[in-house]
Image 1 (cartoon, rainbow, N blue to C red):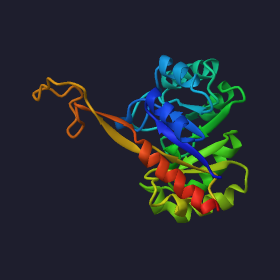
Image 2 (tube, rainbow, N blue to C red):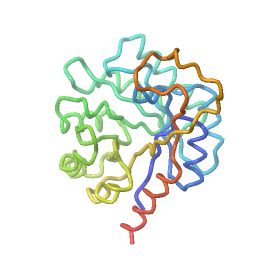
Image 3 (cartoon, rainbow, N blue to C red):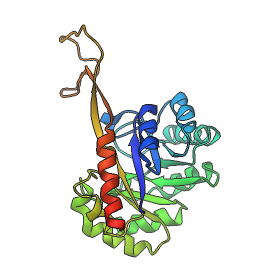
Image 4 (cartoon, rainbow, N blue to C red):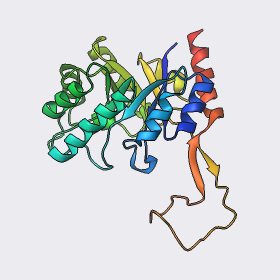
Length: 248
């Protein structure tokens, strides 16, 4: 069966993933920024969830993937901590101002992982030339690439996903992500990718009875103050059922 990975923004989501039988999680913070490095406690507690592979996001901030020397040092230190805490691997991506894979920084960060798996995340989809980026990521020693085929959603990038699978020739794993759900899981699996990455995002209503409508803590329009993003167990199970069907 194809490998499955849940983008998990909490330890609770990790527990849900394990309960459903997901292969591994990518543990992140800050869903509204597309994922940043999670807290030390979250990493440690996620590692205690039995039977679940743990990949830790290494991203010091939201925004682009062109990092300063100081940010690179922060990423290196986060990698060392995640590995010491027992992570199976780390997830990161670095680009040059010209939209190429930053080989110098990437090689440094892969070395910090000390043999653990390194996933090059969807910074890949922001690169100028995906096939050139593919070769750079392979040369730097990454284990896998998370990609939507250069499009906003993976289902829109199916042709490129197929090209990447063919061009990679087994030298690096290709994992499809972004907008993966039960309606397209089988279609994406048929491209030959090694894994599917999904968030199965849902909402848990706040337990607050008193609610102040005049204050927005983040100041971002459209982000609810009294609901919490979570992993929807029913959505996860629907995706897994679809994949089981296509394996038969």
